[in-house]
Image 1 (cartoon, rainbow, N blue to C red):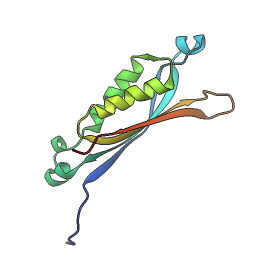
Image 2 (cartoon, helix red, strand yellow; image 1 turned 45 degrees about the vertical axis):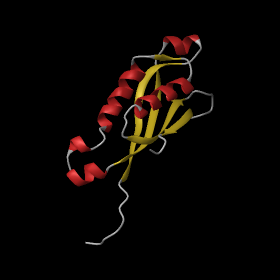
Image 3 (cartoon, helix red, strand yellow; image 1 turned 180 degrees about the horizontal axis):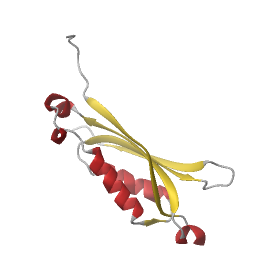
Length: 127
């Protein structure tokens, strides 16, 4: 087996999480749920997961996804910026996450467009 310096930083991508929620400022948006598409990219140190090969040693991205689903589907948002910020906070609340980027698309938000999206990112200061 080759000897090399291993970087155990894992990148996890939660792609195209399709949810329905109340998002917007006009009456139609306030009264009717709309589709949103959520993409999350995050990094964490996976050294323990690699060494132990046990689920308890890995970042539980299923838990993160369930928290995002519950939060988005059970709340109302005026602005896409606010929703994106709140989803990013859910991800960063997991202490093992070193860096994350959340992008949320609102399909057909503007005439003649496929979607409009907002992206925000955050990282932890090195210890």
